[in-house]
Image (cartoon, rainbow, N blue to C red):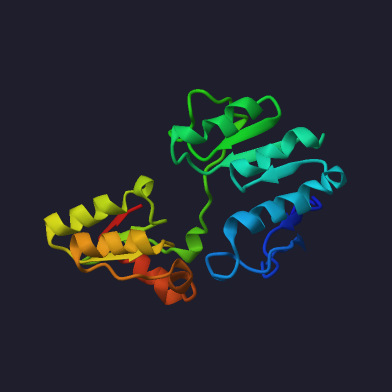
Length: 212
């Protein structure tokens, strides 16, 4: 947008963007229990693809369900793949790679059976996360609570070292319950709460070790 592109963000209606906002989903399903994720995800995608001819390109960040709509429109489409949960989702990627251009978030995250247009790493605002070379006296895990992210390895490291562990990230009840049962000291903390204040960012910078 800083270079003059006309960008429309299709997202929840309470989203904030410097571009144009368009959406039908009232709020994130993680924040509003009454919103059924599967139902509203497809309502969201239908709303977008019904007006696909308005755009020069569609950049999909919503995983593979959008690929089901890709053959129905002529607008070029790019999907940033934010990680594979398992090879079981390949049937919604591999057959569509002649129609959809894939972007990886790292070289390590590329799947050998897919073709990629580029690798674009996630950015970080370094001014919001000041580096402290001295560190602190405890451990930090900062990331989504999912087996692929390695929260269980952080728990093992904390148990073996005897150091306190701070777990920050979005999670489901089962994930955090499992963490509690394994170590007995995990406490649910929301990523949004952590980043809401600069003091939270300073706490991040002061950890002795980061497991992300």
